[in-house]
Each structure stands twice: as C-alpha cells, then as structure tokens.
Image 1: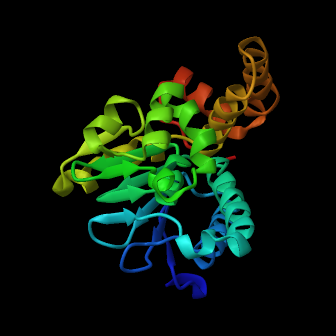
Image 2: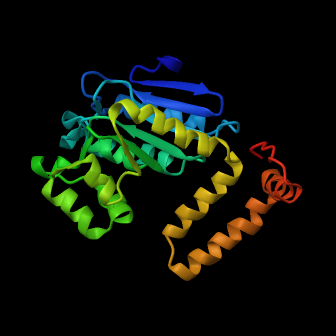
Length: 258
C-alpha cells in the first residue's frame, strides 16, 4: 500500500490518479479507511498535473458492503458520521472530475462513496443500495445526495425500503452513468478517461465548480454565479486563452492545467 496506508492504495499514471480501497473481505468502511481516504484526497488535490481521479475496489466482485456497524454504536457514531461526511465532502468538491468504478455489491456507505463521485461506471453484476433502514438507522449522506441525483421519489424508494438496485435499474433512474459487461468494464473506463484527459484540468475545475455551486442556488442566482465563475476565474486561466486561440488557429490546444 502507498504512503503507509493499510486500506487504501494510491497510484498515479500520467495525469490520472487511482484511489483503490482494499480491506478484505468486503471493504467494510471503518474509521481507519475514512482517515486514509481523507489523507489520500488531501495529497492528490494539490497535484496540478492531474486531470482525473478514479475510485475503485481492489477486491473481486465487491465494491463495498458499507460502513462498520460496530462503529455505528452510540459511543463512536458521532465520530464516524462526522469524519465520513468530511471525507465525502472532500471527494464531492475534489478539484478534478472523479470516476467511480463499481463491480459487484455497493451498499450503504459504499454507495455513498460512489455517489460522491462525478461519474459512476457499473458492471452488469453490480448491485447498489442503502439497506440501513433494515438495521434501524438511515443513511445521512444519501439522504442529502440522492434527491439531488435521482429526485425525491426515487430517493425515498431507495432509502425507505432498503432494497437493492440492479445495475440497469440504477442506470435507468440516473444513479449511474454507464453499465458494461464485467469483461468490458476496463475498456469503458478507458474510453471515458480518454475523453477527460484530452481536456484541460484547470477548465474542468471551473466547470465542475459552476455545476456544484449552481446546484445550491435558485436558478436566477445560479445563472449569475456561472457567469461570475466564467468571467472572473475561468477567463483568467492560461488554458482558456489557449483553447480559444487554438480553435481560431485550427490547431490542437496545448494544455498546461493553468
């Protein structure tokens, strides 16, 4: 494992970073994993050369079976919930696009981890769900994220029934972006990575910022905020100028992620 981590592996290949969770047998998310993911995200967020972050499981046919129930008990629940929320907030607002690869079961806190990414690519054998209601609690992160992703009615179905969604149903309701056969999952990931790595990391940063900040505002204010980010931040970057000049010159832009 990298950087002394026990449950997380971090790799960088060119301008793509890979954050792999690995805590056999089920990738149960405990405080140790939360702290290691947080540290990994903090380190990766400073790397200007990055264009994309991929979050995935290092175990076969399982993404994560959720958070550690033993740490959900009253004496540790507050620390777990707070640190988990802080970690997911870092992932949601990570300064580059994030892609989660889900192969196999993705439950509870594992599904919340996946939802915090900008893209989810799932295999046909993936199952996603929030079964917390069946053990007497509800998923606080999902309660905030799911309605924004799939609407109130679908979010209520997922959270209040605790049922599992097959991959194609998750795709139908807009929870995942793509579904592939298990043997085609890597190829589908590479296709998306090729699209993202051809763009400027700096420009994608501000595009993502406009999306997220606009989501929190009424439409009129969101329009104003998007224009403000465009004019005061994006247009101050070298890459915005380079992209426009390259288009006019009929050549490929040379991105510097600045």
